[in-house]
Image (cartoon, rainbow, N blue to C red; front, side):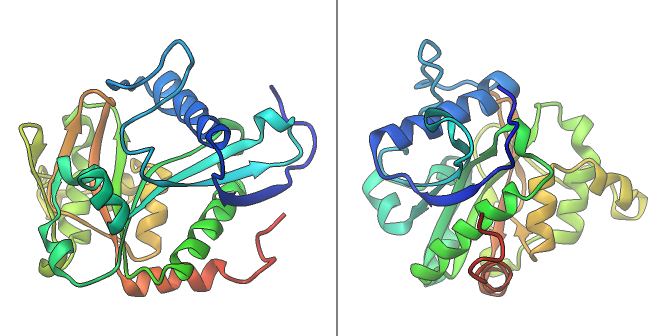
Length: 259
């Protein structure tokens, strides 16, 4: 359906099974229908993108209250603290990256995942509202380090050689926090030589969310992971304390991006 009224944004945590289903429906439209992903627990009949970590995580929802009540969720962030990950058995991205450096850091951790926006709300204010909700969550729980996998669409690594190489040469995390890709589909991002890269073109080829993280001061782990089920090439994005504080300062001005 097309939105005709001006959006009225509200961010809040999922509070009920119905809220979680709304998040999973939006994820299905983005990750399965739009991007061609799949997974062992995806419910195609009900059009729900589900995995086993949903039951342990919090879900930050962006609602447009100008839409019909059963169609108001237009953005989602799934977030997991260390305590939630312990209950789940591990962090989601521990299957793709060795997270030992994070565990040894003594920092209060938050994993970001399943971030998506309804197609009609991209390129506008919606992402700022969703990040404002994330900033509130981070401040309330005194988070020191945010991390999670961010994805390039498709699994053709050769087509992504320029942006992956740029991330390796210019944005690697410091050694103490440099988690490394693991598993049979892990690969080096140092595909092209640094002195031969067209940096402007490489940045242009990055997804908007990855570029936004980099603007906040994010760094990345070493290596990428090809997720054939989800039809993506994943990198591990890392936001340290200074970047977390930047997120808070940018969005914790009550009313600045609230609708």
